[in-house]
Length: 352
Ligand SMILES: *Cc1c(COP(=O)(O)O)cnc(C)c1O
Ligand code: SF4
Image (cartoon, rainbow, N blue to C red; front, top):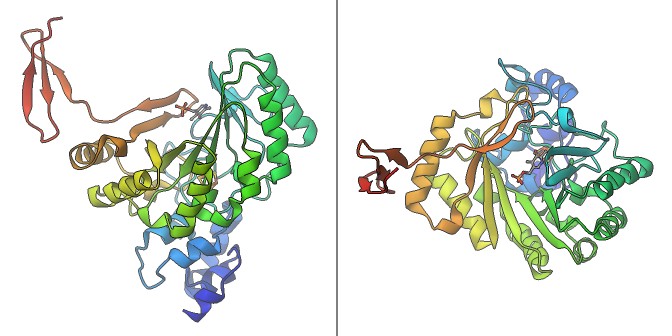
């Protein structure tokens, strides 16, 4: 415990991980090899949540590097959802007509071991220069079909409040942009960064949404919930974004607890992502069938508010597709057979 409470800094090196009780000395060489390939950082907030005595701790599993990351599986890629194919200018991904991603930086508070952009994020990857950011904002300004801007990265809440304000002001001046959405792990991973100044920097005449990445109920600590309250009090609707991860949340009770904790913190579960085919993440992936069975279990167990859509992001840049279970089958008489939440079948007499 002494080592753990002294670890008040972000753990980035194998030594720091060992000090924090997140790695063993005999893993040193393997973990150094992992860190050369994929960035490592664990915030003190997340270190404090981890029980070093539990080898299956779901928080440690998300952030502590694992030698299994060096095992590559067929189909895995450095750009698993095809961002590059849809990037017209640096920092913009324009895959769907009405919305773009704006990626002003590539740093994160923590580096999730299952991240789909794990080979694009980290301190080695440069943030957009002022000129590049202007070019990205110009692209948005000259494409009138862009209704929504999704600010991501990296993690946009790692920007200084000055840079955030600059981006918000520029987007605020573009008449066709109606919605600005942030995707962030900061409220959970480093809640102290959600300062009143940061919240003030998000103020806009446009609709501003914040999607919070959270995969386990334990991540919603009192400090995290406080950070969410600060955002909520500023009139910002909060969405929850989770990744289905083997050994972290892939059972009905854990998933139920996560969804309930999100909704109780006024965060509406939005997406449950099927694990992307990022390199070295095979030990985290469930099958789609397992994901569907979990979604079925949720449907019966919890409020409609607690139901995310289960989505697969197609490799090659073809976008997200809901892959949740189906409840509807055509019946021989032209109507349907519909399954209820208990799995019982009912005839529904619609004619084709
Ligand atoms: C995920 C993603 C979006 C947002 O999709 P929604 O379904 O609107 O949440 C937009 N653009 C790209 C390139 C994406 O990867
Ligand atoms: S915070 Fe997001 S972008 Fe950063 S490592 Fe985690 S999943 Fe990847």
